[in-house]
Length: 282
Image 1 (cartoon, helix red, strand yellow):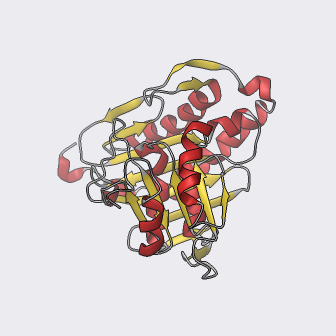
Image 2: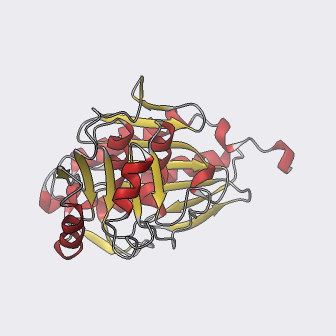
């Protein structure tokens, strides 16, 4: 097939594809409903974490759809937590996948974990054209198209809180050794915190005005944030990747970022200032 004859990646029925993936993943999760059944590991994923069997099977569901897309003539690179970077022909497009964002919650049957998929026309966060996050616990579907707003199901969402400043902030990667120094820095600026256990969901909560902001105490990967950051930005929130904006933040699996998002620039500046190694320059 000549390059001029190839269908454009964004022309695919992505919402239909992603909803099929969700339906299949829900069946998979239903068949592995207990903690013991979900605490089965299969090596180490390309993202560097131990890979759960349910992560691998969830990723298999995604890749089955991607293989069908490629068979229809679409060409792109998949960037996935478990398999790494996988080429489906040429082209500049990317599909950035975290099959289960919040794997610890999924393993412990805590109902806050999500499918996160971003479809991009290029290599940076700014190139992401479609972001999709499905929260399996709440049954909520967040999605955004670049330049067309962000949506929760059929309702457009706006990054608008009650106007009380940093009243409620999401904190991710809540290991005590990483969390305590950040909380100490937050003491004077933030009223309350919540730790959901999923970066993708926390970004969507900023998009919906549920959180005034969020930070990750540990550097995050592109697969964690690619979809949620577009949803947040399309809703009107501010997102930074450490000292980088979306135009400079790479989608490659090797990239790592100090992630923060907030409803406005002032709150974002405050939250960047609590991150280790960044406070002096925020």
